[in-house]
Amino acid sequence: MTYKIRMGIPEMAERWNKLLSDYRKGTISKKDAELYKKWGSALKKLAMDPMYPSLKSHEIEPLSKRYGLKVWESYLENKTSGARRMFWVYGPDKMEITIIGLEPHPEDSKNGSYDRINLSALN
Image 1: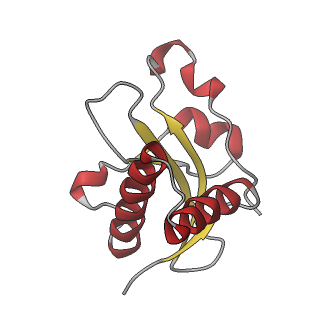
Image 2 (image 1 turned 45 degrees about the vertical axis):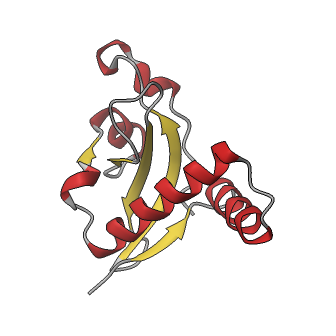
């Protein structure tokens, strides 16, 4: 059974739809094409199994405390400068996951770096 992936509205939906549109039209930049492929691959894995090994999904407690529900982080890439992370929550319905952020990995999670992460609305 797979999860339905929702994009946090409006920021995540707008970002994903722009990448998808530019890719289909052939007007996507090299940098955005790389993001589209990595994000698309991560979304497929997330839908199949949120704990898929290469995603390295784990709860981010400072964000969970701030938003009042468990916020998870999954890898889009690793061991690169500014490696991107996808932030998500379960819900709002059963078997649904809502993407609420796509950000570079914070450099030092011990010094309040997650305070600088801005996530989209959860509705």
